[in-house]
Every structure is written in C-alpha cells, then in structure tokens.
Image 1 (cartoon, rainbow, N blue to C red):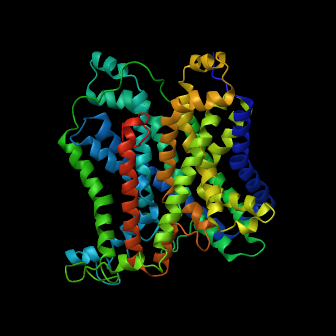
Image 2: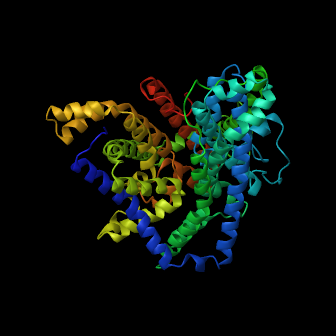
Image 3: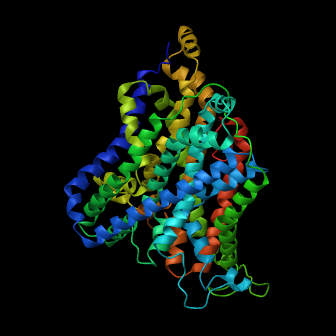
Length: 546
C-alpha cells in the first residue's frame, strides 16, 4: 500500500515544477544555442576566463577534499575529541558565511594596509602586494569554503555505515591503522568524491570571491565575465550571457557525474551505528582543529572587525583610532544598508515559506512519473552554478509581455530564488514522506476524506517538521546570496551581499567591512534561532547538529 495524492495537488506540483524549473532551463537552452556557445569560445577573453574558472574549481576542490578529510578524521573517525560539538559548528561555518564577507576578511587580514597587522607590528612594507589577490588566494579561500561540504558528506556516510564493519575487522585482529586504511578509506572514498564535486560546482559558480579577489589580480572567471557582458547592455548582451552560461553549465557536468557515481556507491543503512576507531583523537585533535579555525576564521574575522572600526584604510586599530563612524554611515537614513537587510531577509523568508509549502504536494506526488521527471529540472537548477539560473530567469521575465517592468525588481530575484532553491526545500520533505505510514492515509480515505482534506489534516501535520527543516535551509542559504542577485538587482532591490561588493569596489573598504560585520551578526542570529528550533526538527537537518 502506498500514499495517494489527488489529481489537484499532483497537478499543482507538476505545474509548479514546470514553471520554476523546466521553463527557465528551456529558455536558457534555446537562447544559448541560438547564440552559439562554441562561437563565444573563440574569443580570447572567454577562453582565458574558462581556463581560470577550471583552474580555480580544480584547485579548490582538491584543497576542500584534503581539508575536509582531515577534519573528518579528527572529529569523527578518531575520538571524539573534547568539545567536538563546538568544533563541528565552527568547522561548518565557512560554508554558511557569505563568500564576499570571507573574502573581505582575508583581504583585511593580509597586506600592508591591514589595521590588525599594523597594530601588531606584523604588516609587510608598503607597496608589498596582498598575497590574497591572485589565483592562489581564490583557490585557498574557495577550498576552505568547500571543505565543510566534504566534511558533511563524510559525516553523512558514517551515519549510514554499519558499525559491524569496524567491529568485524577488529575481531579479526586488525589494528586501528589497518581499519582506517583498508576498511574505512575505500568505503568513504565516494563520500570524499561527492563532497569534492560539490566544492567544484560551488567554486565554479562563485561570484563574490571572483569580484573581490579575482578582479584586482586580473584573474577574470566566467561568472564575472557574464556579469560584465550583461552590464554592458546592447542587443547581443543577453544572448552572449546565455551562451556563456551554457559553457559554465557544461564545465559543471563532470562534477554532476561524479556525484551520480558516488550516490550509487553509498553504503546501505543498517546494523549498529558507526563508532570511532579506538586510539588517536583526544586533545591533540581539538588543538589541531582549533589552530586551523584560528587561521581561517578567527584572524580574518578579527581583521574585518578592526577594519570596520578605523576611520580609513591603512590606519592601525587602537584605542585612539577606534570609531563607530563606519557603522553610523552604513546605518544612516540615506544609506542603503537598512533597505538591503530588509530586502535580503524578506526575500529569504518569502522564498523559504513558498518553497516549503510547495514541497508538500510535490513530495507526495513524486511517485507519479511526470512529477518525478519534472522534479529533475529543479534538481538541475540547484546543481548548476547560480549564474545559469539568473540568466534563465532574466530570459523568462523578458519573454512575458510587459516583463521588462519586472527586470531589476525584487519579484525577479524572488523568482530566481524559487527556481534555485526548490530542491533544497524538497529533499527533507521527500525523505520524510517516504517514511509515512500509508495506513493513516487509507484510514482517512475510508472515512470519506477527500484529497485536499487528507493533505491538510493528515499529511501536512506529519510532514510539518520536515517542511520547517527545508525552509530553514533555504533561508540560511538565501539571506546572504550574491551570485543570483548580482545579475538581477536594480534600484531599490539591492541585497546585502550585493551591497558589500559594491562598497568595496567603490573604494569604501571601511564601510564595506562594517556592513560585512552586520551581515555576520544577521547570520549568527538566524543560526541561533535555527539551533533553538533544532529539537523539533528531523535529525541531521542542521549541518552543525547530529
């Protein structure tokens, strides 16, 4: 016996998925092929940007695989170390912090103009190039931001790994090193590959790091090139942007293939839970992870705070120079910060609510082949770089009569968020719906309840925690999003992520640092609220909670 869903909810699910998934992708394909993606590759600027993007993605995924595997070894495979809960939370934090904020923190933590280094007497001589600017800086930063994806992939696999595997090896006399090398490493290799593939796609589609670090180093990546081409305007700009987006999508497909391969080799859940391999771990692991977090998080964030408290770039932070002038300027009535915060929070919460509601009928109708096929389009819009989704939404909006009015509005950004994050909201609801007891639905049918009544009175209350989980994931991801909104914003629709790089690009580094600190505080508040709600959410919903 299986759950059933009426034609009405199933029809809504199919129509919704076609409108926010298949339609934008179809418009992108049509416009991109019309502009000939192969022709744009003949341009030297495009070829250089494609090569740079591939180099950054390859380097970042390799760094992410290395760091993520080391973190998993210290936090999950051997141990558990003291304070593991806090260390896991901090280790996951880089993927939740907006990339443009991380980039600005790294910039302020190095170079001769760093207020923090000047105060400590560690600043290099004036005229010394900032080491963050360049291909190595982009790879290092995006690798650090991708490392939590590898860590979470390994942690998820360990939750499914039967504990008998390790116990059987130990019973046969295998030493801890042999258990790790001969048993766990082969079993966890697909998880490492899947996490590295996610890091590849994240690095390939990143915009904030490409703007703040790549442009000063004259290392232009594909996302920045698309943004520039679209900013130039003209009759051919949109077609060229669509063609470049298709090139970017093709560059992401190897990572999608790796994810598919890894998913087929994921271990089947069962047996007793996995337990860490004896030996190792302990305070030494906590110290190693703590030192890593000090370098990649604490020092950059301290430098960012120091930069927000000095009157100008190049002034060392001290009791005499510290000022709240930058915060006052950022929050002044004529500034855009308050409006950007309202836009970001409003868009994130609206998208989270709508996608969570839409996920209910979609999850229940996934057993129908047309709905399951249409859902693959929403999976693809989430898997591909955000630039592809933004260009696709622009094409859809301009195809509608009078749609030019929506271009540059909050409505266009919201539509892009709906298209991009539907898969993120659907996954926990789909997993929960697969575990529902079909007898409850059958009992409601036998009492004469129609499809809509069963949906609202039986299925919705049971799936509400999973819907809330999906909404939280969407809100945390969307509130500081910059790649999509950078291509879609207009007057009055600037988001918080866009504001940071706009201020930095215009030379207002101190004010950009102040806005970045406010963005971190906003993210901290949302994460704290999500943590308080974690007790009522399905296990594993929040990446920093087991």
